[in-house]
Image 1 (spheres, rainbow, N blue to C red):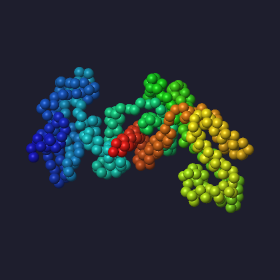
Image 2: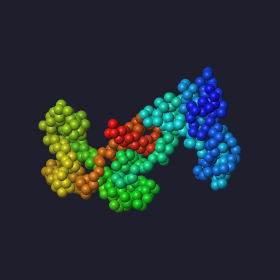
Image 3: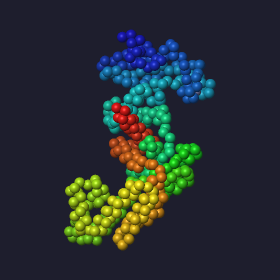
Amino acid sequence: MRDSDWTRILDWPGYRVYQHEINEKAKLLTLWVRRKRGNKKLVCSACGRRCTTIHEIVTREVRDLPWGLYRTTVVVELYRVKCPDCGPRIEKVDQLPSKAPFSKRFEETVGEACESASARRVARQFALSESTVRAIDLRYLERWSASRRKPSLRQLGVDELFLGKRTKFVTVVSNLESGEPVWFGEDRKKETLDGYFRTELSRSQRHRIEAACVDMWAPFQRSIEEWAPKCMLVYDRFHVMQHANKAVDEVRRSEFFRKGGWRREVVKGKRWLLLTRWVNLSEQKQQQLNQLFALNRRLMKAYLLKESLERLWQQPNENAAREYLRAWVRQLRWQRLPSFEKLAHLLLDHQEGLLAFYRVKIRFGVVEAINGNIRALLRRGRGYRNLRYLLLKAQRIAATKTEFIALRKAA
Ligand SMILES: [Zn+2]
Protein backbone atom coordinates (compact mmCIF):
# COMPACT_ATOMS: atom_id res chain seq x y z
CA MET A 1 0.00 0.00 0.00
CA ARG A 2 1.32 3.43 -0.90
CA ASP A 3 1.43 6.30 1.58
CA SER A 4 -1.31 8.05 -0.38
CA ASP A 5 -3.60 5.06 0.31
CA TRP A 6 -2.75 5.21 4.01
CA THR A 7 -3.59 8.90 3.89
CA ARG A 8 -6.95 8.21 2.32
CA ILE A 9 -7.97 5.61 4.86
CA LEU A 10 -6.73 7.62 7.83
CA ASP A 11 -8.75 10.57 6.55
CA TRP A 12 -7.45 13.37 8.73
CA PRO A 13 -8.35 16.50 6.77
CA GLY A 14 -5.22 18.46 5.84
CA TYR A 15 -2.77 15.72 6.90
CA ARG A 16 -0.94 13.01 5.03
CA VAL A 17 0.81 9.80 6.10
CA TYR A 18 4.53 9.81 5.26
CA GLN A 19 5.61 6.71 7.15
CA HIS A 20 3.98 3.68 8.72
CA GLU A 21 4.88 0.65 10.78
CA ILE A 22 2.92 -2.54 11.37
CA ASN A 23 3.68 -4.65 14.40
CA GLU A 24 1.89 -7.92 13.66
CA LYS A 25 2.73 -9.58 16.92
CA ALA A 26 1.51 -6.80 19.18
CA LYS A 27 -1.22 -5.80 16.69
CA LEU A 28 -0.02 -2.23 16.62
CA LEU A 29 -0.19 0.19 13.76
CA THR A 30 1.79 3.41 13.87
CA LEU A 31 1.32 6.16 11.32
CA TRP A 32 3.47 9.26 10.99
CA VAL A 33 1.59 12.22 9.59
CA ARG A 34 2.36 15.79 8.63
CA ARG A 35 0.56 18.63 6.94
CA LYS A 36 -0.38 18.32 3.29
CA ARG A 37 1.50 20.76 1.12
CA GLY A 38 -1.49 23.04 0.54
CA ASN A 39 -2.40 23.19 4.22
CA LYS A 40 -0.60 26.29 5.38
CA LYS A 41 -2.99 27.97 7.75
CA LEU A 42 -1.41 28.19 11.20
CA VAL A 43 -3.43 29.23 14.22
CA CYS A 44 -2.24 29.89 17.77
CA SER A 45 -3.86 27.42 20.18
CA ALA A 46 -4.00 29.96 22.98
CA CYS A 47 -5.70 32.93 21.30
CA GLY A 48 -6.88 31.63 17.92
CA ARG A 49 -4.91 34.23 16.02
CA ARG A 50 -3.43 33.40 12.61
CA CYS A 51 0.34 33.12 12.65
CA THR A 52 2.95 33.04 9.93
CA THR A 53 6.25 32.45 11.74
CA ILE A 54 7.24 28.97 12.82
CA HIS A 55 9.28 28.70 16.00
CA GLU A 56 10.05 24.96 15.88
CA ILE A 57 8.70 21.60 14.76
CA VAL A 58 7.68 18.99 17.36
CA THR A 59 5.89 15.64 17.28
CA ARG A 60 3.05 14.27 19.37
CA GLU A 61 1.68 10.77 19.71
CA VAL A 62 -2.04 10.23 20.02
CA ARG A 63 -4.25 7.19 20.04
CA ASP A 64 -6.70 7.11 17.16
CA LEU A 65 -9.54 4.78 16.18
CA PRO A 66 -8.42 1.18 15.64
CA TRP A 67 -7.93 -0.27 12.14
CA GLY A 68 -9.50 -3.70 12.38
CA LEU A 69 -7.80 -5.46 15.24
CA TYR A 70 -4.91 -3.03 15.16
CA ARG A 71 -4.60 -0.43 17.81
CA THR A 72 -3.55 2.74 16.06
CA THR A 73 -1.12 5.40 17.14
CA VAL A 74 -0.71 8.53 15.07
CA VAL A 75 2.49 10.50 15.38
CA VAL A 76 1.71 14.05 14.31
CA GLU A 77 4.17 16.65 13.22
CA LEU A 78 3.19 19.92 14.83
CA TYR A 79 4.45 23.46 14.66
CA ARG A 80 5.15 25.73 17.52
CA VAL A 81 4.27 29.13 16.14
CA LYS A 82 5.55 32.53 17.15
CA CYS A 83 2.33 34.26 18.09
CA PRO A 84 2.65 38.06 18.19
CA ASP A 85 0.44 38.08 21.30
CA CYS A 86 1.33 34.90 23.20
CA GLY A 87 4.89 34.18 22.14
CA PRO A 88 5.89 30.66 21.14
CA ARG A 89 2.80 28.47 21.26
CA ILE A 90 1.71 25.17 19.83
CA GLU A 91 -0.57 25.47 16.79
CA LYS A 92 -4.23 24.55 16.98
CA VAL A 93 -5.17 21.29 15.24
CA ASP A 94 -8.78 20.15 14.94
CA GLN A 95 -8.03 16.50 15.51
CA LEU A 96 -6.17 17.32 18.74
CA PRO A 97 -8.73 18.99 21.00
CA SER A 98 -6.81 18.71 24.28
CA LYS A 99 -3.42 17.94 25.72
CA ALA A 100 -4.45 14.33 26.37
CA PRO A 101 -2.92 11.68 24.08
CA PHE A 102 -6.10 10.97 22.08
CA SER A 103 -7.46 12.17 18.78
CA LYS A 104 -10.75 14.00 18.69
CA ARG A 105 -12.61 11.23 16.97
CA PHE A 106 -11.25 8.68 19.43
CA GLU A 107 -12.57 10.82 22.29
CA GLU A 108 -15.90 11.13 20.54
CA THR A 109 -16.23 7.38 20.20
CA VAL A 110 -15.46 6.91 23.89
CA GLY A 111 -17.89 9.71 24.83
CA GLU A 112 -20.66 8.15 22.76
CA ALA A 113 -20.00 4.77 24.37
CA CYS A 114 -20.41 6.44 27.77
CA GLU A 115 -23.95 7.44 26.85
CA SER A 116 -25.22 3.92 27.08
CA ALA A 117 -22.74 2.16 29.35
CA SER A 118 -21.03 2.78 32.67
CA ALA A 119 -17.53 4.24 32.74
CA ARG A 120 -16.27 0.92 34.03
CA ARG A 121 -17.58 -0.99 31.05
CA VAL A 122 -16.29 1.55 28.56
CA ALA A 123 -12.91 1.41 30.29
CA ARG A 124 -12.77 -2.34 29.77
CA GLN A 125 -13.88 -2.03 26.16
CA PHE A 126 -11.13 0.44 25.23
CA ALA A 127 -8.47 -0.82 27.67
CA LEU A 128 -8.30 2.51 29.46
CA SER A 129 -8.51 3.33 33.14
CA GLU A 130 -11.87 4.39 34.51
CA SER A 131 -10.61 7.83 35.47
CA THR A 132 -9.29 8.35 31.93
CA VAL A 133 -12.68 7.40 30.50
CA ARG A 134 -14.39 9.92 32.78
CA ALA A 135 -11.94 12.64 31.80
CA ILE A 136 -12.51 11.91 28.09
CA ASP A 137 -16.28 11.86 28.60
CA LEU A 138 -16.17 15.19 30.43
CA ARG A 139 -14.19 16.83 27.60
CA TYR A 140 -16.58 15.31 25.06
CA LEU A 141 -19.56 16.77 26.91
CA GLU A 142 -17.88 20.16 27.36
CA ARG A 143 -17.28 20.35 23.60
CA TRP A 144 -20.89 19.39 22.93
CA SER A 145 -22.13 21.97 25.40
CA ALA A 146 -19.94 24.72 23.92
CA SER A 147 -21.11 24.00 20.39
CA ARG A 148 -24.86 23.95 20.92
CA ARG A 149 -27.38 26.73 21.21
CA LYS A 150 -28.75 26.92 24.72
CA PRO A 151 -32.54 27.12 24.90
CA SER A 152 -33.86 30.38 26.34
CA LEU A 153 -35.04 30.33 29.90
CA ARG A 154 -38.57 31.51 30.62
CA GLN A 155 -39.84 28.90 33.03
CA LEU A 156 -37.66 27.82 35.88
CA GLY A 157 -37.85 24.75 38.07
CA VAL A 158 -36.07 24.81 41.41
CA ASP A 159 -35.75 21.76 43.56
CA GLU A 160 -33.39 20.09 45.94
CA LEU A 161 -31.80 16.70 45.60
CA PHE A 162 -30.13 14.60 48.26
CA LEU A 163 -26.84 13.40 46.81
CA GLY A 164 -25.57 11.33 49.70
CA LYS A 165 -23.70 11.73 52.92
CA ARG A 166 -20.75 13.59 51.47
CA THR A 167 -22.31 16.29 49.31
CA LYS A 168 -25.66 16.28 51.12
CA PHE A 169 -28.13 18.55 49.34
CA VAL A 170 -27.80 20.03 45.91
CA THR A 171 -30.05 22.71 44.49
CA VAL A 172 -31.17 21.83 40.98
CA VAL A 173 -32.29 24.61 38.66
CA SER A 174 -33.97 23.45 35.49
CA ASN A 175 -35.51 24.79 32.32
CA LEU A 176 -39.10 23.55 32.34
CA GLU A 177 -39.64 24.09 28.63
CA SER A 178 -36.59 22.21 27.38
CA GLY A 179 -36.81 19.74 30.25
CA GLU A 180 -33.15 19.92 31.19
CA PRO A 181 -31.20 20.90 34.28
CA VAL A 182 -29.27 24.14 33.82
CA TRP A 183 -27.38 24.52 37.06
CA PHE A 184 -26.37 22.67 40.23
CA GLY A 185 -25.33 24.34 43.47
CA GLU A 186 -24.17 22.82 46.69
CA ASP A 187 -26.57 23.17 49.61
CA ARG A 188 -30.17 24.44 49.53
CA LYS A 189 -30.06 27.85 51.17
CA LYS A 190 -31.26 31.17 49.86
CA GLU A 191 -27.59 32.02 49.22
CA THR A 192 -27.27 28.92 47.04
CA LEU A 193 -29.93 30.09 44.61
CA ASP A 194 -28.73 33.71 44.93
CA GLY A 195 -25.43 32.42 43.60
CA TYR A 196 -27.13 31.11 40.49
CA PHE A 197 -28.91 34.37 39.71
CA ARG A 198 -25.80 36.41 40.40
CA THR A 199 -23.26 34.40 38.41
CA GLU A 200 -25.22 32.74 35.62
CA LEU A 201 -27.81 35.23 34.43
CA SER A 202 -27.71 38.79 33.23
CA ARG A 203 -30.24 41.31 34.48
CA SER A 204 -32.31 41.05 31.32
CA GLN A 205 -32.23 37.25 31.43
CA ARG A 206 -33.53 37.36 34.99
CA HIS A 207 -36.32 39.70 33.98
CA ARG A 208 -37.37 37.40 31.18
CA ILE A 209 -38.21 34.59 33.60
CA GLU A 210 -41.99 34.48 33.78
CA ALA A 211 -42.66 31.56 36.11
CA ALA A 212 -40.93 29.27 38.56
CA CYS A 213 -42.13 25.91 39.74
CA VAL A 214 -41.03 25.36 43.33
CA ASP A 215 -41.75 23.55 46.53
CA MET A 216 -43.16 25.55 49.43
CA TRP A 217 -39.59 26.07 50.60
CA ALA A 218 -39.15 29.61 51.87
CA PRO A 219 -35.43 30.15 51.11
CA PHE A 220 -35.90 29.54 47.36
CA GLN A 221 -38.95 31.76 47.26
CA ARG A 222 -37.17 34.64 48.91
CA SER A 223 -34.31 34.33 46.46
CA ILE A 224 -36.63 34.29 43.43
CA GLU A 225 -38.62 37.27 44.70
CA GLU A 226 -35.42 39.22 45.13
CA TRP A 227 -33.70 38.37 41.84
CA ALA A 228 -36.53 37.73 39.38
CA PRO A 229 -39.23 40.19 40.37
CA LYS A 230 -41.42 39.46 37.33
CA CYS A 231 -41.46 35.76 37.97
CA MET A 232 -44.67 34.12 39.14
CA LEU A 233 -44.31 31.40 41.76
CA VAL A 234 -46.20 28.20 41.06
CA TYR A 235 -46.15 25.40 43.59
CA ASP A 236 -45.42 22.04 42.17
CA ARG A 237 -48.37 19.67 42.43
CA PHE A 238 -46.00 16.80 43.07
CA HIS A 239 -44.57 18.48 46.15
CA VAL A 240 -47.98 19.49 47.47
CA MET A 241 -49.13 15.90 47.17
CA GLN A 242 -45.97 14.79 48.94
CA HIS A 243 -47.02 16.96 51.86
CA ALA A 244 -50.49 15.38 51.74
CA ASN A 245 -48.97 11.91 51.73
CA LYS A 246 -46.93 12.84 54.76
CA ALA A 247 -50.10 13.90 56.54
CA VAL A 248 -51.74 10.55 55.76
CA ASP A 249 -48.68 8.77 57.03
CA GLU A 250 -48.79 10.69 60.30
CA VAL A 251 -52.38 9.58 60.81
CA ARG A 252 -51.37 6.01 60.06
CA ARG A 253 -48.56 6.13 62.59
CA SER A 254 -50.65 7.63 65.36
CA GLU A 255 -53.37 5.02 64.74
CA PHE A 256 -50.74 2.33 64.76
CA PHE A 257 -49.56 3.34 68.21
CA ARG A 258 -53.03 3.99 69.59
CA LYS A 259 -54.39 0.57 68.74
CA GLY A 260 -53.23 -2.67 70.24
CA GLY A 261 -53.55 -6.35 69.43
CA TRP A 262 -54.94 -7.53 66.13
CA ARG A 263 -56.15 -4.07 65.12
CA ARG A 264 -52.58 -2.95 65.22
CA GLU A 265 -51.71 -5.79 62.90
CA VAL A 266 -54.23 -4.53 60.36
CA VAL A 267 -52.66 -1.08 60.13
CA LYS A 268 -49.19 -2.50 60.03
CA GLY A 269 -47.54 -2.73 56.63
CA LYS A 270 -50.19 -0.65 54.86
CA ARG A 271 -48.02 2.39 54.37
CA TRP A 272 -47.44 1.90 50.68
CA LEU A 273 -51.13 1.25 50.01
CA LEU A 274 -52.12 4.45 51.76
CA LEU A 275 -49.64 6.50 49.79
CA THR A 276 -50.75 5.16 46.42
CA ARG A 277 -53.57 6.76 44.52
CA TRP A 278 -56.77 4.75 44.36
CA VAL A 279 -56.78 4.57 40.56
CA ASN A 280 -53.31 3.06 40.62
CA LEU A 281 -54.24 0.19 42.92
CA SER A 282 -55.30 -3.25 41.78
CA GLU A 283 -58.73 -4.49 42.79
CA GLN A 284 -57.18 -6.75 45.38
CA LYS A 285 -55.24 -3.89 46.92
CA GLN A 286 -58.35 -1.70 46.90
CA GLN A 287 -60.10 -4.44 48.84
CA GLN A 288 -57.30 -4.55 51.39
CA LEU A 289 -57.66 -0.81 51.86
CA ASN A 290 -61.43 -1.13 52.23
CA GLN A 291 -60.93 -3.70 54.98
CA LEU A 292 -58.61 -1.31 56.71
CA PHE A 293 -61.07 1.56 56.36
CA ALA A 294 -63.90 -0.53 57.82
CA LEU A 295 -61.85 -0.81 60.99
CA ASN A 296 -60.44 2.66 61.07
CA ARG A 297 -62.57 5.59 60.03
CA ARG A 298 -59.86 8.12 60.73
CA LEU A 299 -57.50 6.55 58.25
CA MET A 300 -60.25 6.41 55.69
CA LYS A 301 -61.00 10.08 56.17
CA ALA A 302 -57.31 10.92 55.79
CA TYR A 303 -57.04 8.90 52.62
CA LEU A 304 -60.12 10.49 51.08
CA LEU A 305 -58.88 13.95 51.95
CA LYS A 306 -55.64 13.26 50.17
CA GLU A 307 -57.44 11.82 47.14
CA SER A 308 -59.77 14.79 46.88
CA LEU A 309 -56.95 17.32 47.16
CA GLU A 310 -55.69 16.04 43.81
CA ARG A 311 -58.77 17.56 42.15
CA LEU A 312 -57.59 21.05 43.09
CA TRP A 313 -55.72 21.01 39.77
CA GLN A 314 -58.69 19.80 37.73
CA GLN A 315 -61.00 22.75 38.25
CA PRO A 316 -62.33 24.72 35.28
CA ASN A 317 -60.75 27.99 36.42
CA GLU A 318 -59.00 29.83 39.21
CA ASN A 319 -62.15 30.94 41.03
CA ALA A 320 -63.55 27.43 41.06
CA ALA A 321 -60.22 26.18 42.37
CA ARG A 322 -60.19 28.80 45.11
CA GLU A 323 -63.68 27.74 46.15
CA TYR A 324 -62.66 24.09 45.99
CA LEU A 325 -59.71 24.70 48.31
CA ARG A 326 -61.95 26.51 50.83
CA ALA A 327 -64.44 23.67 50.79
CA TRP A 328 -61.64 21.18 51.22
CA VAL A 329 -60.37 23.01 54.30
CA ARG A 330 -63.93 23.29 55.73
CA GLN A 331 -64.25 19.50 55.66
CA LEU A 332 -61.48 19.25 58.21
CA ARG A 333 -63.56 20.75 60.99
CA TRP A 334 -64.44 18.27 63.73
CA GLN A 335 -62.23 15.62 62.18
CA ARG A 336 -59.46 15.84 64.79
CA LEU A 337 -56.70 15.19 62.28
CA PRO A 338 -53.87 17.46 63.43
CA SER A 339 -51.55 16.61 60.54
CA PHE A 340 -54.23 17.72 58.07
CA GLU A 341 -54.94 20.89 59.99
CA LYS A 342 -51.26 21.69 59.66
CA LEU A 343 -51.43 20.95 55.94
CA ALA A 344 -54.50 23.18 55.58
CA HIS A 345 -52.60 26.09 57.13
CA LEU A 346 -49.72 25.51 54.77
CA LEU A 347 -52.04 25.46 51.76
CA LEU A 348 -53.94 28.57 52.80
CA ASP A 349 -50.69 30.43 53.46
CA HIS A 350 -49.54 29.54 49.97
CA GLN A 351 -52.86 29.90 48.22
CA GLU A 352 -51.70 32.35 45.55
CA GLY A 353 -48.88 30.13 44.41
CA LEU A 354 -51.13 27.09 44.40
CA LEU A 355 -53.73 28.75 42.22
CA ALA A 356 -51.15 30.45 40.00
CA PHE A 357 -51.31 27.20 38.08
CA TYR A 358 -54.48 28.58 36.48
CA ARG A 359 -52.71 31.75 35.34
CA VAL A 360 -49.60 30.34 33.71
CA LYS A 361 -49.23 27.17 31.69
CA ILE A 362 -46.57 25.08 33.30
CA ARG A 363 -45.59 21.46 32.80
CA PHE A 364 -45.68 19.76 36.17
CA GLY A 365 -43.61 16.64 36.49
CA VAL A 366 -40.64 18.01 34.55
CA VAL A 367 -38.73 18.72 37.75
CA GLU A 368 -39.43 15.22 38.99
CA ALA A 369 -38.44 13.65 35.68
CA ILE A 370 -35.13 15.52 35.75
CA ASN A 371 -34.47 14.46 39.33
CA GLY A 372 -35.28 10.89 38.37
CA ASN A 373 -32.71 11.02 35.57
CA ILE A 374 -30.06 12.37 37.90
CA ARG A 375 -30.79 9.67 40.46
CA ALA A 376 -30.53 7.01 37.75
CA LEU A 377 -27.16 8.46 36.71
CA LEU A 378 -25.92 8.37 40.28
CA ARG A 379 -27.04 4.78 40.72
CA ARG A 380 -25.32 3.70 37.54
CA GLY A 381 -22.15 5.68 37.76
CA ARG A 382 -20.94 6.61 41.22
CA GLY A 383 -17.94 8.90 41.17
CA TYR A 384 -19.89 12.02 40.29
CA ARG A 385 -17.93 14.03 42.79
CA ASN A 386 -17.60 16.52 39.98
CA LEU A 387 -20.97 18.31 39.87
CA ARG A 388 -20.14 19.88 36.53
CA TYR A 389 -19.76 16.42 35.02
CA LEU A 390 -23.06 15.28 36.52
CA LEU A 391 -24.81 18.37 35.15
CA LEU A 392 -23.46 17.93 31.62
CA LYS A 393 -24.37 14.26 31.69
CA ALA A 394 -27.94 15.02 32.77
CA GLN A 395 -28.23 17.74 30.11
CA ARG A 396 -27.05 15.37 27.44
CA ILE A 397 -29.64 12.79 28.50
CA ALA A 398 -32.39 15.40 28.32
CA ALA A 399 -31.21 16.69 24.94
CA THR A 400 -30.80 13.31 23.30
CA LYS A 401 -34.19 12.20 24.58
CA THR A 402 -35.90 15.14 22.93
CA GLU A 403 -34.08 14.34 19.73
CA PHE A 404 -35.30 10.79 20.02
CA ILE A 405 -38.90 11.87 20.46
CA ALA A 406 -38.62 14.32 17.59
CA LEU A 407 -37.36 11.53 15.34
CA ARG A 408 -40.15 9.22 16.37
CA LYS A 409 -42.73 11.89 15.59
CA ALA A 410 -41.26 12.44 12.17
CA ALA A 411 -41.27 8.75 11.35
ZN1 LIG B 1 -1.71 33.59 20.51
